[in-house]
Image: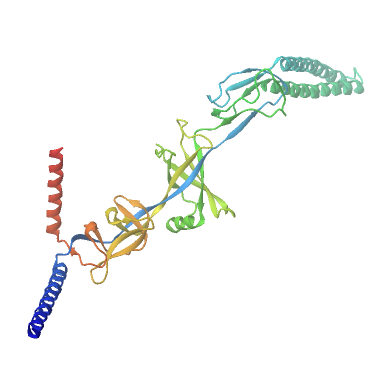
Length: 394
């Protein structure tokens, strides 16, 4: 009985041991199969450099070149307005009329005084000619001649005085027609017809010039330093693109042609300005827009195809091959696009190898198989065939 028990136990132990060996062997075999499985095929490209135009983004605000407050220059009742609020007006166009009768009468009176003094001057000039002849022949005393000369000079001065008064009266009369000092768009009427106005009444309305128009924008000192590093000349004129809040691009290109001579202590930025043509009046004073400012010179920088760059909530990255040829995650910082490439600010250098195709199969640290030119061509042909097949099915 004892011998049977021992035999049974031995068989059971051998069975468990055999099963353990089989399980271990299968695990080892599976691991070997995974290890020996073909690495995913990928397309690798060396990082190149390219001479690129640097692009900087900034928020901007539209500002009229001229903003004129239209005011009365004389006193009187406002009798007429010749425009509608929001109209586009030309320089010299009449906007308002101030009651002109008083100034018309003053001008006529001044004109009459001038005419009278001119007539008196003409009379005494003739008298002086006669007196000059008579005094030479001793027909009149020298004192009488001097008196005639003094009267002539007095009326000559009176003519000048009356002429100035007449011109001043005409000037005041002209002010009864309040005209536009510049081309532009008229704003709201602040004082309506029927009110009595003076030079101290304040503005009647405003005019904002339209074409050209300014867009002012702040640029932080770090960004400005990068721009100067590329262009080297702080006074060079740069191309500027404008985008509306809707994302639509403005049809005309602007020129950055001014920067302030100091840095704002609060924001640490320098105020700059671009000038845009605005023939259609689309850009409106006070509106907020987005700008892209382009360097006038090019900078040689690393670039990688856009398809090679991936992004998570924290950063952008690429799969870069290390010295062993294994893919590793490499964080990158970009600074805009150039054609189909990302411009690399940091993270990559010329000659680095990055994966551009087959990214979905890559596991950091695991081997990859770099496809040959022939394999790449076959893959492209396969993709085209698949696309045709999909199109035919649709």
